[in-house]
Length: 348
Image (cartoon, helix red, strand yellow):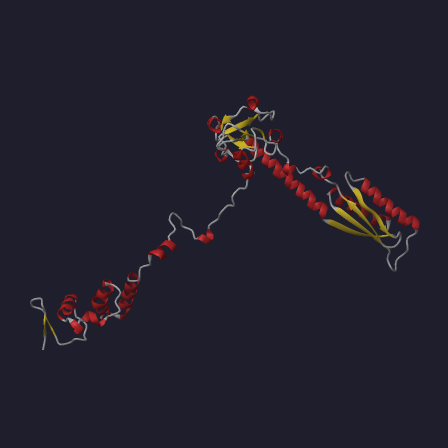
């Protein structure tokens, strides 16, 4: 018995479990066998129409190919028929306008500044400081920030706010009327009593600075800070030299030369004096000569000093602490890295 195709001139043999021989035959066979004998019902786990058509037509055709070609075609079809990612997965893996992975990206830490520049200044009215004299221009008459910024060349100059903004507590006091108009000693600006709503009430002190001059000033500050840290590290690093009370004159001179080099380099030197157990014992006069030579060595180095005098017993175990040449920043207690511009300090 043969199945009759709904299409004209198409018949099928009695093989319900066999695969169709051709694409046209498989399509006609699927249409001609409804119900439980349908060829499509043999694959209930189909996920889409594309997979169903693949199982009906492409799969049986690939099984009849040679082994080598069959493997290549199977791999090709497997790659092209993979499940598409969900919208959530596409959102996670989408990185527009980027060719690097997140692990390879480099970010720069934001610059921390205590002063506001240009558009960062929120006050509507400001006071300008003369960069050369440090005095307020026009006797402190306020001018709008917008006019000052329009008169500047943003490539060469910038507007810097010297006065810090008022605290929220000060703003609240002004809104309540507890603060009268006038100077604010904390910040250097003043309150504008005419702005009763609080908007633009605080008039800060600002200054127009040259970007090149500010860059040179920052570079000098960094160099001074680096030199100060270098001097501090040298002063903190201590060298220890051991001397014998009965040391030979030539050996003593060699050790004194080393002490002078350390002191000239700004280092701290600890001189340890002791007597050898099996060596010759030095006399009191010889011990005094050794101490005197050490003091002369310290005097010969400019800026060096004796931090701690002879501690211990003469002729036995004793120590002397010496301090090397100290830089100007340490000698006067000045932190050059934090020194402000005189005009800026005066204007603030």
